[in-house]
Image (cartoon, rainbow, N blue to C red; front, side):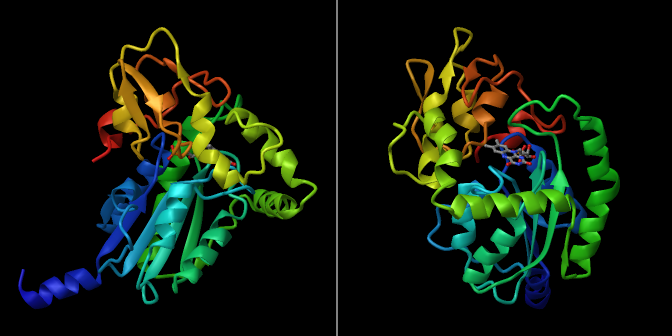
Length: 294
Ligand SMILES: Cc1cc2nc3c(=O)[nH]c(=O)nc-3n(C[C@H](O)[C@H](O)[C@H](O)COP(=O)(O)O)c2cc1C
């Protein structure tokens, strides 16, 4: 490639950054990257840099919704966004996957991107199977085919046109999320939301902690049963290196993202926590090798 072509290539380059615990967001990011001929980049591979800059003129951010109304955006994705630099001329779009509804997630992401001098130009919500618990009437096949047959093309078309576009998918959940967010800001209601998280993370009831302070400690509730073979899959798959193997058993180091990868990908289904986990859900088009940390 000569220098001019190289420059042209860079100017039109597209980068799709993603975070995923059980593969739903990875499939979405991978399909988009393939269709747009962009690069697929795991957020965990860049998030520890001091600042994140890119030559790409299109940046996609794909991630799951967590605790709608409370934090909405996984903490690792928030850290990533807060390090984006020189983004004022970029076309930035985001896709959040969710089990029930995205609430104010994309609005919140736009606020974070604006704080970095850029703007979220387009945002999309993609409903996928709920990975945190089993929804009894969920039709997973229908959700997968809705993504492949409809939504993927529509998102890529908007991005190719550099449209300014926001989904109104699940409008009612957007309202619910906004109300939750307001309640959370209220001194009276906040403790009601935080109490169950404190209990899961084994903090005393009267401790004065915020949700984002509690989340990394949710792994205190994780433990292995007798069927753990010490295979180390959990440690290799954890996107943030939060698991050490000591005496052939996982030990969690309390900088957990709550992605559930360790629980859901354990080949023995030996890890429990976060309530009890009844089944090892992961997206069927994703294998352990796709998830392993670089
Ligand atoms: C800790 C946690 C919290 C979640 N909170 C919500 C939520 O508030 N609303 C929702 O619709 N889905 C929620 N989900 C479900 C995920 O957003 C959804 O299943 C997503 O597609 C998972 O993506 P992944 O497979 O890429 O990790 C939550 C999942 C986890 C693990």
